[in-house]
Length: 272
Image (cartoon, rainbow, N blue to C red; front, side, top):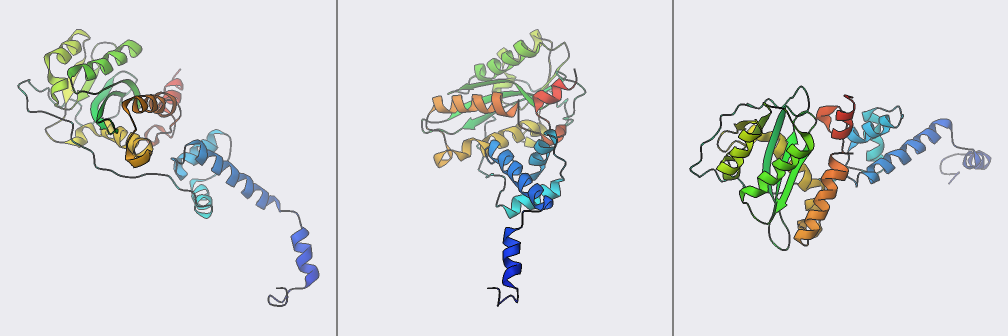
């Protein structure tokens, strides 16, 4: 080998016996930290969120460097795309509220604007339905409910959970689609009793409730579709794993680009 590369044997043995340079040591330490952050996220984080994790731990590094080291070590964010079934049934006799939110997803403080929606969760026992309430200020899931039906109680339970834990003042803007669950008398009565102002998307326009749609996409990419066959084995498994994802990971640890790569919990805590 030395003859081929026109090197001396003494030079080769000196090279292999030489300790790693400071630069190489720092590179190896960075690779270890990147690998740990990637593994700790379950393989979900790409370069932007891993960079935020490292900076929060006091590591001075650029996103470009993290991306380069991830490529070199074969690390990448784990995602996939699937078809999302339609959940909105707006063919009903109840009146619609105007679109007061008008795609203004920014909020000046917590409990000023909430976005609500429903999605299907596939399981081997059939569909499980998930309703959520999202605070648009921090993107925190402040209320949620799961059921094997699409009755109005699915959504009222999620809203009541949010009201119990957040105790908002009068005038909070409550945005949803035009589904019968949100337009029916029971749900609208609850909004009136708690002095919430209703807002509803235009017919068939998912972008009017983009934050909720984005959460459902994230949930399915990062949890649901990673299950064998792209679905949970049972309703009980789905309930347990979605609870853990929402309460232990999404709200407390997952970094969101729209709030400066902080978690919803830390973002709200930074106000105090």
